[in-house]
Length: 362
Image (tube, rainbow, N blue to C red; front, side, top):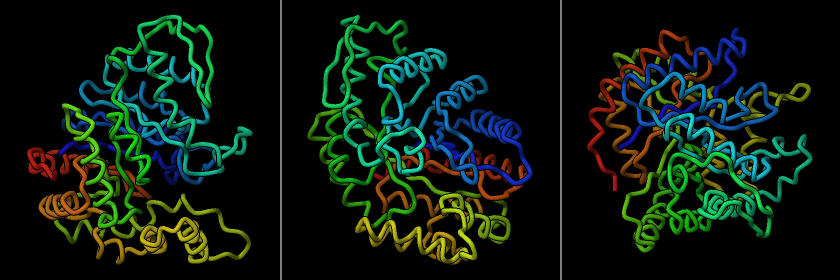
């Protein structure tokens, strides 16, 4: 298995953005010392109650300056928000600055609020994201200046001044649970993954199909399938649960729309769950409806909290059932204090990762 420090870079109580970023660098420096494989961040916009990272490239460069071994990058760039040529230039420069340690996630964007202030159509986001792979192939091709004409993008005679260090481009990821998108990822050698709100028993057949398609495509390396959720490790199960379980149930509170008038917390949760019901995803809707219930999270193993032995066992069981070989752990959540945070990261790196390094879920 592979292991990542994954960060929404939540706004933290009593911290300025600068203080929060400085804490992030301390987390990543420790993860690098512990030989974590990856450091990933999201790209979110216009939600100050939630994430404080709108520029994954700045995250990657800042992380790269404070680490020596970890591969870092966005998970991922919201492709439709960018000029395609500008993003191609940026990816190449970041990869060079990182000495070839960049990983690149490409996503269409999950929230319409990220699009409206830019004057962009949220409903028109999947097609340009899928097409961007072809654009990168042209931009980083041997023929320079390059030209490209597709359904969504057109560039005439542009020369990329700096090419990426990794050829033909950094490893690409597209997190998705959509069967059509997973077929695209397998056919094009792209890593993938999913988030805790998609039930692992529903995910398993989709990702087994992805693996079958991957093998049919003839790739000579194994793909990464990631799973992301909250994790907290402490000396005993009791101490870990006392410290982190309720906080884990508030980790994703920023996803909820701000309260309107006298709207209760429960009403906000119900409104958010309806979005998933509307998409025909009953399993995801059920998790969303209970995402803020600590007992539900614990009973369904949706967050990994406990002693090193417990977290190791639960991760192994989940990876087998959910068909993933990369764990993207969200270590810093809610108002968890830094002393507890850093102890959790250290115990995970020193006592959990070594037990699972040689474990192959598929």
